[in-house]
Length: 307
Length: 256
Image: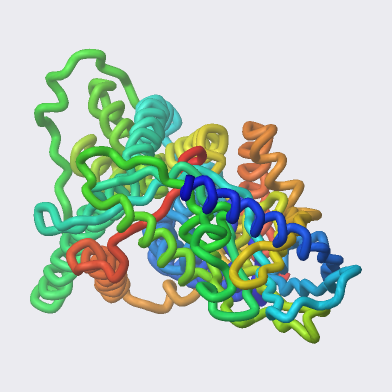
């Protein structure tokens, strides 16, 4: 059954969209990722215009992160103060990101920018994850124990000015690094239509030195507000948020997420990570090939007014 | 003197043609409104009509052309080129105005049914329906961009050249059906019917088919344009409600 999407102005198979939402939901439930980095490229593949895909998946991420953040709030694993600082940076980055997005759109390079960002980030993250989990599996085989990461006590972060106390995280550091992390995640959220958790979580652990138990909740807190802001910016400047598309993806997504959580509970963490890494690399390779191989149609058409 | 004679002859022959053109189109459409609803999957429009005339049927065969044109808009056509190993848009050309949809149905081979000069005057064929005045100096062949536009839109069934799709019976009745694809834009679709003899247009008729989104599609589209902030907030509210609602429902299911 075909359904006509009012904003994207294309007709797409209803079950394809539901299935897509479901698939991403399963993955996000299994791996605990937002799924934004998968849903946007998948939407490209089914023929949704890139601008609509990016804006709508930002909306999608708000939904999938919201219920997760609620449970983290009730467990008090959200550092609200750190979240606010990250958020301020995120809003600034998001505003810049949408401006950059609109500017490049008028030059006709937006698709290239989005695809390049995806290839680079998915490639790096996927590669790192694959490497990490390969090492973890080998170490587990040799020693039989789980690896222990040591938190760095002092580094260059501790010499920067404007120090703040983050009680929940037990940190006394400058506000500048969290702000910068926030800005870069906001930029990515606007350009790629992703939450940016896959960048922010490592940054919080390795750069800011936050304890792992508050990292996920705090990043979800920041992601919800930044993606909500991004959705609003795209909706008011580009008119590219497609509510019908978002609802369909949501319906598939929430059901898939519950399924995925059940599957995830029955698998080993290392296996999950390797699977996720492989998936990320496959998407990355597909997008990369599209850039490298000679396209079948060299020309493309776009309208002038709604660029 | 000789030139004047030829001119006079031309005027006379034109006048004669105008006289014999006492033929008019009476048109019927299967629908003069196309509603894009949520399950819109394209539409077929049946165009039929008769020729009203007071004089006997001339010997030359009558040919019929039908065109449907969607709302026109300026476009940008971009060409990719290989730079630093990847394919990126390098050249762009602006098309001043091109219809979002354009179909031509004829009763015979286009070049026999309509003369080139008449095509220029009435802008019937697909390339004539596209207006591209000038290209920037750095682009040598602006026509390649226009050709690309036609190629892309023909592939999406947005441009259609349907030669021989109009059936004419006894020089009086004609009918054709033209399909509208699912990815239509809104607006008035200008529909023209030309009657030709010997490649000359002897009569023409024009009407409009309205293509509009209806129901929820209409509501969402209008809201997103007129109240973008409300629209954005509403999509967020739906997202949050769905995320929260789903986890609540599943929690209940698991407990119950």
